[in-house]
Image 1 (cartoon, protein in one colour):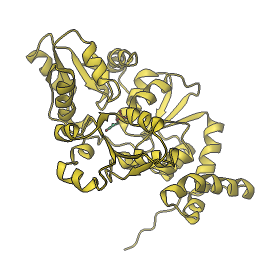
Image 2 (tube, protein in one colour; image 1 turned 90 degrees about the vertical axis):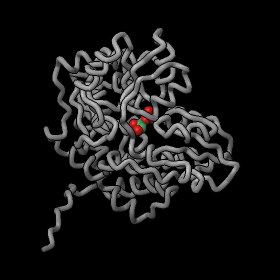
Image 3 (tube, rainbow, N blue to C red; image 1 turned 60 degrees about the vertical axis):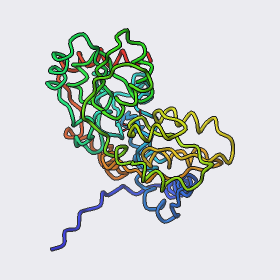
Image 4 (cartoon, rainbow, N blue to C red; image 1 turned 60 degrees about the horizontal axis):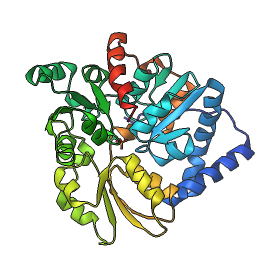
Length: 341
Ligand code: 13P
């Protein structure tokens, strides 16, 4: 049996505008090897999405791990987890479409309860966010009374609600260092917990959670990626401690972006993080030489330009983020505190 799904239909569009859109897309995406036919195939969708978002008052936020057609085709704001959370508080539009994973959209909703927040493809499958529950945090607090709880942003609203302060890879170090206590509960990323203990010198009680994308990078794999000794290596804090110890720099994708912005033409960089970020850097900094990490987050890649188109066309309830108001209010305190760093 063969089942052919119907391709979303788009109203006829102005040919001149379509030609301009194809050229706009090709200028950026050809850097990654997209040919003109591929740009022709998605141009009707990006053009329609860009028209609809203005008509309907929708702002599109995209994490740097999204595919380049979303980032360069339709996103209004692109960034790391911290930048997206901060920028989401400055949006005038009533509706926000967060192209990323669910916990990022939940963070936006925690901060903006009056807004309608949607995701293109809903499905809770960030291995970090899925690794721990609010009940787990309550038990940890009973076991270690007095230790402040710092939760990584890759957690559910329920876990944030049980935490004292939230953090991202961009401010985890600063936040842990700012706490008076020498012992800190940091969850749920075990690699990050160990890395932050080494960096800050604090006692960290952590949790058995991993980002499957960064945890999959072993030293063996890194050796194979490192073909050129002149390449600067920069690993995401979610990588294993042995990776962090063997690279030149570590941090989050926001820090990586800063390094790219400060680099000189011809510099060679290997970012050990999701490939979508590297693709973004290749387009934004064509004079630098970026090696591929080939690290793919399948949860981030659930979104594509067609799912973005479908949700912008029809804002369905099943893609809407809804939170229990009591949980949201408690989580708000931890997230709001994070924005100061
Ligand atoms: P940053 O956006 O803080 O770099 O991290 C994103 C992330 O979720 C990595 O798994």
